[in-house]
Length: 143
Image 1 (cartoon, rainbow, N blue to C red):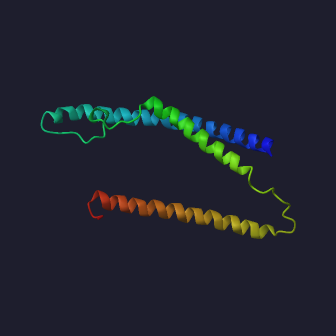
Image 2: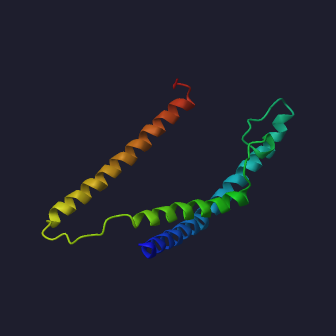
Image 3: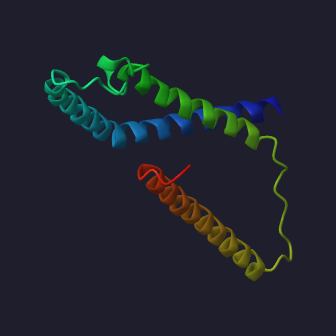
């Protein structure tokens, strides 16, 4: 059992680090560009500060940044690695797969379709409702 646990944890860690690498390669450049855009907007806003603008607490100069970008990048790998390590260890606790025997393939296919449909409705519905609530909150209609 211990060897299975070690294998599950190792597989989870490797998968998590690969997921972190993918997120880093595909997302960090865009995130750095977005932060540069915010910083340039902040510098433009400095001119407004001389005309009474007090700041909103969301920029580093307003004291809004808790962690540096390098700490956040390390946190990306730490979070994906830790989560996947735990999931890999939990997979060991699953019961062993048994032969499906005479289980009808059509029933399995229907179950898979209903599972995908459920996920589609759940995430689409969550996105639409969240979007509507955010839109109402932005217009001051929520409360």
